[in-house]
Length: 184
Image (cartoon, rainbow, N blue to C red; front, side, top):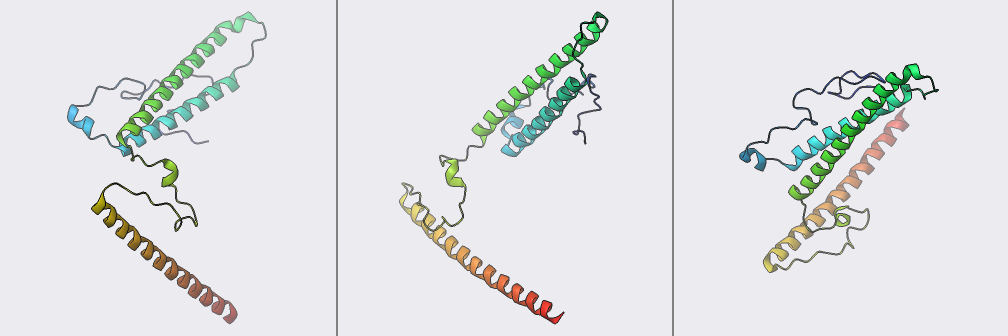
């Protein structure tokens, strides 16, 4: 099992090392106003990916802690140990809650910043064999709509030509491989 980058050495049942300065759980100083405009979807997605990796590593830590913890058997001399582990588990769960909140904020921010358009997501997914019969989206603009239709028509024509060329190359390669196999 490989550890996550930046996760530090963690042992089951033991508290991990304290987070380094600038760690996602610690509040960061607000960036200058000019830098705030330069936050892109890619940056938000990278931060979101790091947050998800941190969530996964901390969740694995919680499971390791739970696996290493034995159920109390009524003996009171281990009460302090169980209380420590319980407190550590509560801290990990609190950190996970904060990470999930951060991930939700990143998701909402990414949705605001990187809004594709008013096109529903189902129309963004290309389906095999449905391209020719796909309903066209008509916009209200007259000239822009005509230019768009011309470009889409040329694009479809070029795609058909490329498909034809690809099929010809596939057949040629098949014939060459067949001849080489017969030679041997």
